[in-house]
Length: 343
Image 1 (cartoon, rainbow, N blue to C red):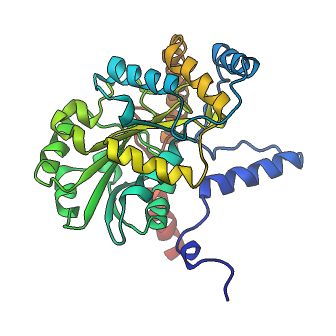
Image 2 (tube, rainbow, N blue to C red; image 1 turned 30 degrees about the horizontal axis):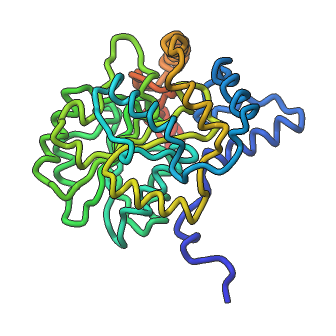
């Protein structure tokens, strides 16, 4: 009898974490390694957030909490959505998990049936398809080339939808391209989605605050309020607040789906770390003064990298609207190399 399940044979380990682990191993060996693997800000967690965690420890907030988060954090998340996104949620429409990845995992585990399809625009964050597969769904990958800014078009979306489509996944700003959808682009996608009431939208907004120049962040609900009942938003404190290791993500959507996700979590991880939850309350409710300066520094670093890459003969690099990634195309370099080898 095989010890390892057949399910595991359908997925691969996270390439991001594998590369990061290798980089850490080489660094411990004394090698000079610059790791460009995990999506992690190089800023430290702000002091007020650290102090909130210390205060939580000293006050004894070190026990189990509700499986989907403490009420104080849910209230902070509710206020955040109302203030920053002009979207109103009730407390029972909000869930807190161990990072945004767990929120997405629980969402698909709670909502997908065998062979349900999830449309994923490519390039995409490496974990999306494998999480869908673990939930017995089918990832439908739609190639979005550099010529269209790595973004899904309404025609592509319309052509990809079938009777089995359960979710469309939108990540804006995007990992790994940094591309972000304008309000007009989201409205155009929304017009397609209005024609298919069986399709739900997962909006991964984790890089919401890391935007550049005069770009304005919008959620698809802002563009098409009619889609609110079919949209689930995932976000977290990892990127904007430099809290990757604290592992706090959150989601908002249909209350029945939120309850179902809580059942999944109750049989897997139980509640997120209590101390990290109290720190996240301070992150969302405390000063936000560092967010724009941090984004400005990321923008300056983006410009330096773009300048270097675009000076390379044959290299083409899209100018990201947000996040902290660049996604250069080496296609012309590869073509030249093949031609050289041929002759």
